[in-house]
Length: 90
Image (cartoon, rainbow, N blue to C red; front, side):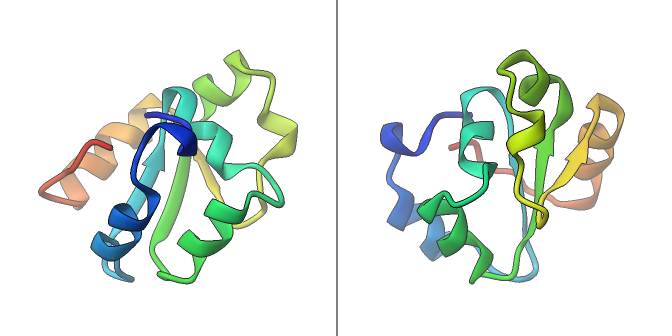
């Protein structure tokens, strides 16, 4: 939910694996834009990566999203919480 300048990126990368999903929301959607070095590191974890459409739209970033990101709405957000338990908020 925060931009990469406001949390410990390396700690996140140590916690994420290919069995996980990462959903970018609020200011965190800025990480999912093309050519973001933090996003490139996250791709190496092979986790499933999502970004909330409404937050991308609110920030004018929908057209900047990396092709490796699945854009989801609030309904899919809820589905992801059931599929991936437990959740961690960064």
